[in-house]
Amino acid sequence: EVQLVESGGALVQAGGSLRLSCAAFGLTFNDYRIGWFRQAPGKEREGVSCISSSDDSTYYADSVKGRFTISSDNAKNTVYLQMNSLKPEDTAVYYCAATIGGLYGSSCLSLVEVWGQGTLVTVSL
Image (cartoon, rainbow, N blue to C red; front, side):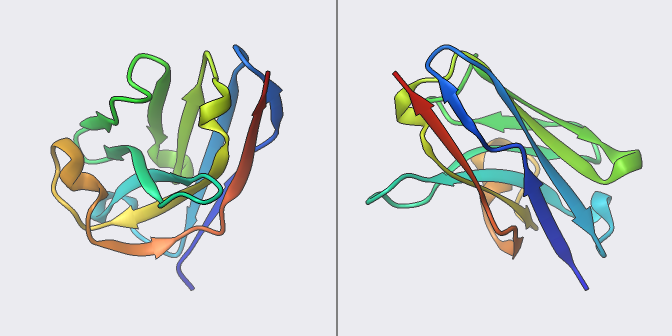
């Protein structure tokens, strides 16, 4: 069974940091791009970042560039999202996804094949 399992969501104060993890089971890591999306209450889901494990190319949305870092541990089939300098507007449910999108730019967020269940990040003032 193909499955993505997120962890690491929590309540944190503005300016703080969190690291989210996305563990992949039942899929060959190098066949997919792994992306992070988020959905805030009352808003549409948006793509945040993605990585291609085959060449470590990455993409970041402008809203998180310079604050978030995505990385991949291929031996553990796990992708991480290090989130620093968190803001209240980063509050959302964060989902990881396995995609078959392009290798470069935001195209790596397209063509989602598998979604994780989500993990809640709450940033307080």
